[in-house]
Amino acid sequence: MKYYTQKWWHDGQKVHIQYMFKVSDKAKEYNEEYFQRLYQEVMNNLTARYLEWADDEQLERQSAEEFALNQYLGLLSRIKRLPPEIKNEIADIRVAALGFVTQDILEKIKAFCENISAQTKMVMDMYRDYYKSVTCSRRL
Image (cartoon, rainbow, N blue to C red):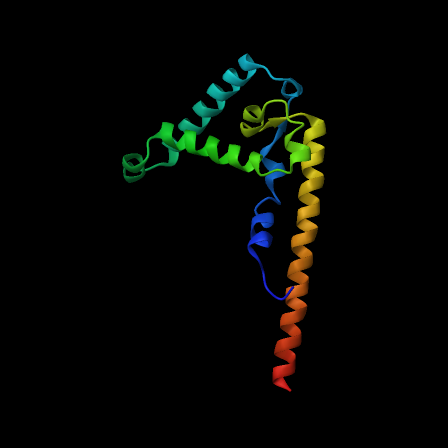
């Protein structure tokens, strides 16, 4: 490959997804009460953090509640981009979007991230080698 591609860029966006998760044994099964409690807790934390650092101009453009909801929806979309073999094993994707998965799922996500990282590094190395070969031949 001589050029970076959209696939390479999109894969690169997935490399660090593993760091957004915490392990929870309660995430191994669908539980509406657990989700509602976590949702309120996470949304309250996001809202409070936004209010701490947002200035008046930012608050005019987006309320703290909108900010929190957009953060949650962004995390949900990142979860949906996981490969089906991982995503299909998640009991409640909403809980995963709040940052909680089982240890087993986290291990699979870590392996996925390591694989993606290796692939994106390989593409970068191939591009660097190609670039060196082109620039070196032009100097001669």
